[in-house]
Amino acid sequence: MKYKIPKDFLWGGAVAAHQLEGGWQADGKGISIADVMTAGANGVPRQITAGVLSDKFYPNHEAIDFYHHYKEDIKLFAEMGFKSFRTSIAWTRIFPQGDEELPNEAGLKFYDNLFAECHKYGIEPVITLAHFEIPYHLVKEYGGWRDRRVIDFFIRFATTVFKRYRHQVKYWMTFNEINNQTDYQEQFLMATDSGLVLEPNDPDSEALMYQAAHYELVASALAVKIGHQINPEFKIGCMINVSPLYPATCNPQDTFQALKAMQRRYWFADVHALGSYPRHMEAFFAEKGLRSDITAEDRIVLAEGTVDYIGFSYYNSMTVAAQTTNPEFHFVGPEAVQKNPYLQASDWGWPIDPLGLRYSLNWLADHYHKPLMIVENGLGAKDELTADDQIHDQYRIAYLKAHIQAMKDAIEKDGVPVIGYTPWGCIDLVSAGTGQMSKRYGFIYVDRDDQGKGSNRRLKKDSFYWYQKVIKTNGSEL
Ligand code: BGP
Image (cartoon, rainbow, N blue to C red):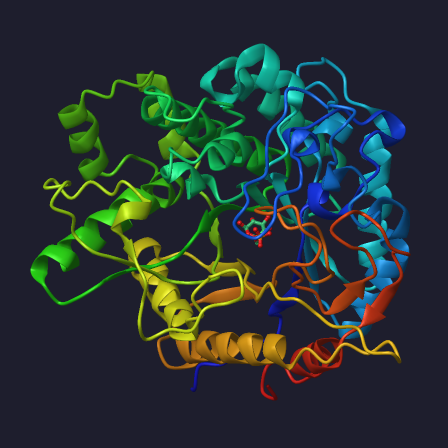
């Protein structure tokens, strides 16, 4: 029998609470790390301010006001034929400060309503627990995930929502792109992944990253265990950013550098899926003298709380070359990354590589032998609105078509078990990396600009009708 995209395949779209909900103070919501991130631009980093400052613009505060538009938006997703909708539960709607004993009922109610609206159309919610949304109070008072007590606060949050939505939500993910912080020199990635707000070149950043990541991995494993007790039907996954690393040349030095870079970026998935640290990381910690607080009890938890599936984002591949300054082949970031002469790039400089998605799917299947879900993929691009309210986004269709074809090849020719595809930003939203609205991913256009001005009206792009057909034909017509 020929391998095919399964009949119950979870076609859909993905977003995150802080990038679209707005309503940053609605119904008792607290301030999250995303609420203190200013707008950046292409090549201009976002700043993380010390609290909310009155003279700064914070694009996530209002975002696209999904908080008040969700019924209209879900109706549009249903019209496209979505079977699933990936979003996150904003931690600060449920526990505004993060360390309270009791949850905020009004916040819980919002997600009751949101999930009911999804189910009205047969749309399965796929929920991320932590998507760059740690309560700012935990950042300020505890220093984010460097503090072991944050595990308990996270578990209280996870347990609360697992219980509340045990009949509404089946698919969960713990930490969004937990491995972004591999680039520990990038302040923004440390803040969004782990609530670590550090000075540039902080000499402790590497050690702090491994400590924070460990506590997150323990929290994730505990959540998996608790979730399965609350509802054994739950499918709880991890969420890894996958950008496969290619060697710049066939020089063994570059090839070995690429291998070490893969190890250094993807060990997080080993812990999530296999339940223990890979030996190459233990050896690396020993060699570097990095001594995190990792207890024997933690190791048991990690082994007992392995994930049910691997959720991952894929936007691009990366290419690396060995550096004479790095004879041990440690992957230390930007200086090793090269331009790939075989690939075009997006306007934001992200290489476009559909075969890299097939490569990633094969690599993940070989390593983890678990179902895979592509929970983010897409092209951030500038859209132009015509005088008669059309958006002819052929470039987006071309990108998605090539990537879905690559996914189909992986399923049909390579036998990779893929259970869903939720392209990123199915409705235009605030970019995480730049804070821009003009970096658009959606099938649905939202009339709002980088300064937060606009009517917020929703319009269907050409890609809306194209994706509708893809879903309707279960991927046979692209
Ligand atoms: C991932 C994040 C998303 C998202 C996406 C696109 O890293 O999980 O939150 O925004 O990338 O990135 P950007 O918004 O920077 O274009």
